[in-house]
Image (cartoon, rainbow, N blue to C red; front, side):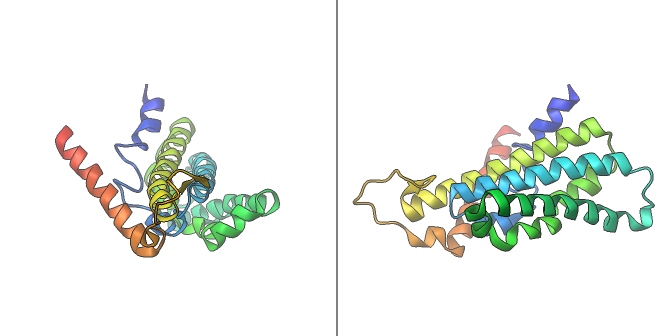
Length: 197
């Protein structure tokens, strides 16, 4: 069924970060811990689902000359909901994610899916695309954050997983560690794609 194929394509085949290479800025910035990655992934998923649905509903009444500004306004409305909800109920996570929550408005994953998919498909498939791409982004963020947190802090979800004698690799939680981790994972994904082909 096409609905489920739209969901699953975002996980591996068209993963927004590892395959399409979209949204790498927040991936590099917030993936120092798994909790941050899950929080950002949930926020992106919520905005993707809601904006895809609304854009799919209004696609026939929006003039093509102003479609991008309209899409940005729709996306910004849902980002504001996420931002205020996190600030009210998850203040520590909101503080940790900082400026990267409002920057979801200009995240290439969300605007790209609005333009490339939601504006050309019905509500049901746009919902599936939002779910799939959101889960794919969350998966990518979590994998990157898992590697960085374990190597850089010796913890996972804040729980110590490495022996007390383990010397953390501080570079893993710094910017170079983010680039190396993401680059290694993208190379691994490309290698797996080549083997399958």
